[in-house]
Length: 118
Image (tube, rainbow, N blue to C red):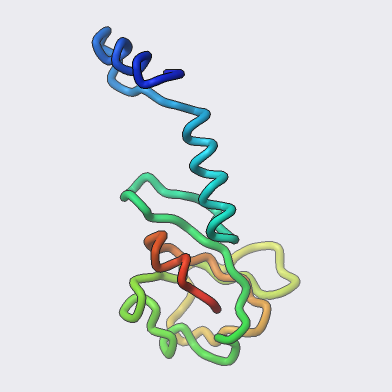
C-alpha cells in the first residue's frame, strides 16, 4: 500500500511488484458511480470496462435481438431481473422481450454506458 507517488517509487525500488493506492481507488469508484448512475462494478479486464444496472423504460416490448446492442453500441446484456424477482436471469436469449421495469445488467465500455437510456 502506497500513500504517495514517492512512496510508490521507494516500494518499487525495493522490489515490490504490485503497489496499490486504496484511497485513490475508492475515490475513482465513487466518482464513476456519481457520474454514471447504476454502475455495479468496474472491471479490470480492460481499461474503461464496467457493468451497469439500469431499469427498462423506452425499450419495453422490444427483444434483445431487435435492440441489437452488441452491434449498435458494443454493449452486452448479461442478465435480466424481472420486476418483483430477487435473482437475475443470466445470459438471456436474444428473443427475450423486455418489459417495463425489468432491470438489466449491461457490460461495456464506460463511454457507451454513460450515453445509454433504456
